[in-house]
Image 1 (cartoon, rainbow, N blue to C red):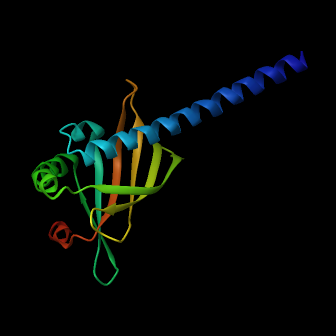
Image 2 (image 1 turned 60 degrees about the vertical axis):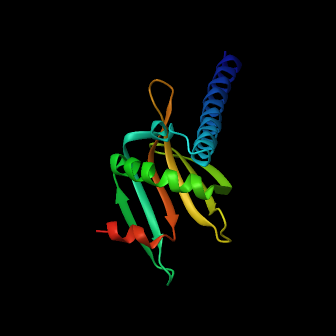
Length: 156
């Protein structure tokens, strides 16, 4: 009986660990789909975000100091739509490296370094993604560093 219970316990543990591993892999796959959609200027980008996502642009000032500029999903989507046409004309894309996935209380944090087209520097970024009851994944929080000083006009 003791051997049977031990076997059941091990199976339950393995199943739980496997589920976490599967969810982490799904979170990374979701991030990769997002990157592809963003780099192809897809109109599906809004579908990747929760309607109440926390969006943070962390402006890297010339002196190296950081300023966080937060916005809501609706405002961000309006800004994104305006910027997509220019980005497409410039063939702007982002390259990502050092992608890691970490379990956090409210989902999975996908962290990476991002390099904009034509630049030599790398900027920090992360998304907290959460599996929805219907099985879809959504961004519920995003921080992306930028050197674009124009975002400072939105700082509060």
